[in-house]
Length: 195
Image 1 (cartoon, rainbow, N blue to C red):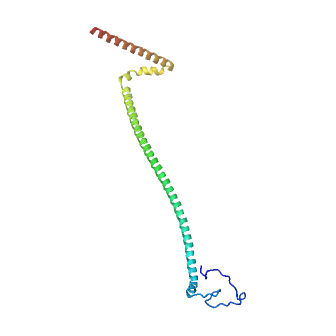
Image 2 (image 1 turned 90 degrees about the vertical axis):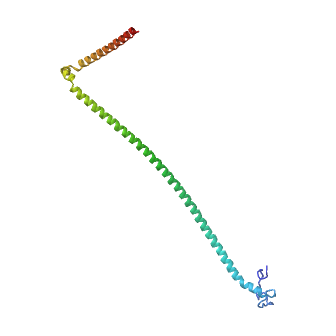
């Protein structure tokens, strides 16, 4: 350390009445050079530069802290945007999936509608056939000939009519069975005879 920067014990003239200081002299009587005087004159400027640098450093630190906070906020915002984008992608995927399912359901509904139309057309065709058959039956000779029997049957009580119908059905059934047996026997007879 130089003598200028060393702490010295200052004595006031009242404490030390023997010593008087002349300009350019130190308290211990040593002479001060021009370089040291210039150096002392520059000390306030250096202090000012150091203070400016320190305040600049402090401002830089403050700016750095601000930028760090902004960077953190930007990072949080980026993460939020990424999260929202992922959510939007999921929503779009789900919407596309629902759209595809709706299209499949619509295609199935269209197929079912076409099948229903085909069944309706078939039913209408059967109804037209039945109506044509009914018209043909009503206008047939057999229907006209059996008209008196039907008129009498309308006056027969229901229970008696059921009984007669059942008897007729069983009789016809028995007759058809007998007819089948007779045909089988005749076929067997003719096949044995040919051998």
